[in-house]
Length: 240
Image (tube, rainbow, N blue to C red; front, side, top):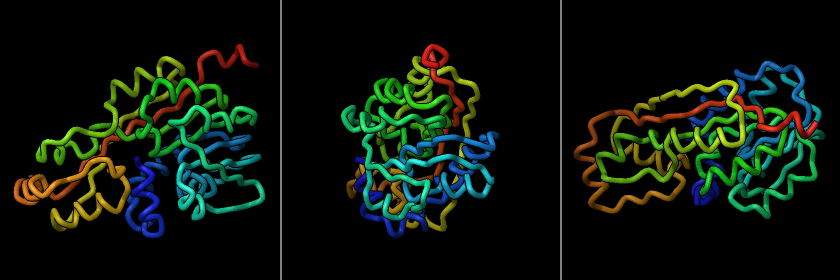
């Protein structure tokens, strides 16, 4: 599970989440509302979304930081308007903790790629809030590394994510971005993968694959492919 790497390296995570920080900033750049109302950040981690909301001067009535990792939530800022919840979006029973709370805005950055079944997850999330902003890593992340080592991506492709969202949301805005992060050596790159949490801890390289990567990886960078969405839940008008 993704939480293992985030938990293990929670204290050092802020030194390695370079791409996640860029993604969170870009997602919040999309938000134009000066008042977000009651906000929930799903997969809040150590608080990148909250930090960017404050930098943009975006206000809210309340902010719920939800994450599966208790260690990450300890690093998340606290405050009078901030509530912290341990939530596993792969567990319907866990998501029911959110049903009795009225949210206006649902945010999630660099987390929902770890949904085991996106269709079930988005079905549940579409009942929360009037608008949602998501950034989701796709299987295009580490594309060349996977091809070189003969690995399959542990996360979903663009088509699966988009089709799953379209069942429960109207896509108001969408963008696909690729980021590249450069390294001095392949060993430094592999160290980053281990400590950043981007791999989720699900893809393990044995000695043979590690040797292949060190000898044959053709770039000095890793690719990251990210989908950004502004979404309106289908049927929201009927819930008013």
